[in-house]
Length: 306
Image (tube, rainbow, N blue to C red; front, side, top):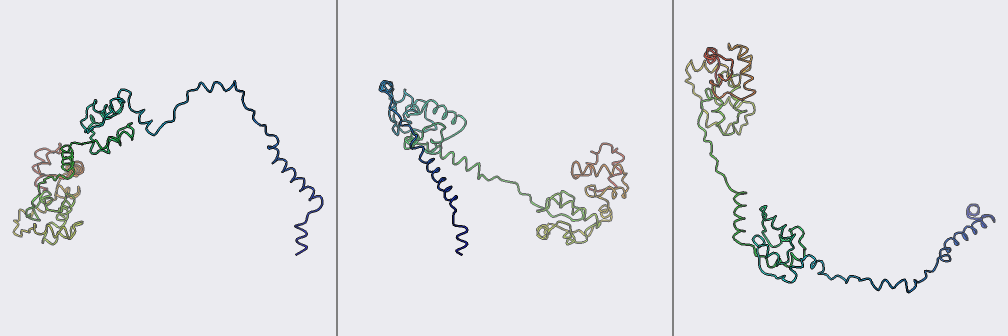
């Protein structure tokens, strides 16, 4: 241990001399500014005479900024009285201490439909001094009739109730009802009505009301709502039954229409019409396909149904 301390913590004669010289040099650099600093000499009296001619501004008090915002023409006539900022005239605002710029800003605000609802709104006027706004707030008297009218207008526009005509559903025959008849049922929209018709075409006809429950996308809750409005008429005539077996122009595919005897061009046109303009509302809408001739139309309505 002693040997280790002797090897690492002892200095040779040359090292001690070098360390001493370094400390002396460092002390010299630290003390040099104190010995080399020049003492400033006072200026001659003749060079200070010009300072006596300078007009220094007086110390500003707490209300000096506020006094500067008031125009000179109104300083002598400044008075306080009750006023309504929504109706006060230019001369009244000037007597209250508003500058011309403040008055112009307030007038533009009122002309654009802006209204003051409370005294604190004075602080929102662009450029008005806060001290002026605070001093005038106790004198603000906003017309009560205006406030009541404003509140009623807001209430009518926000919470006003509109009357809507409620759609009253009627009972429909599930094997003969068209797209429009299905859509008048609660909870049934165009998409779901189209799925019901497509499923009916796939089966040929519904044999029971409960079969409608199997339609894709029809939930049990919606089915329970529409079930009271559904009826199945088992005494369908053979003519009507054969009619129900025809493909629907609103749900049948192009291949199914061709299979029923419709020409390929007309079958393609029917499908394209549905994609562009939506479902057919009646068989008469087939006449809107421009190239279908009257004779073709008469034959077509015997091959398809709505």
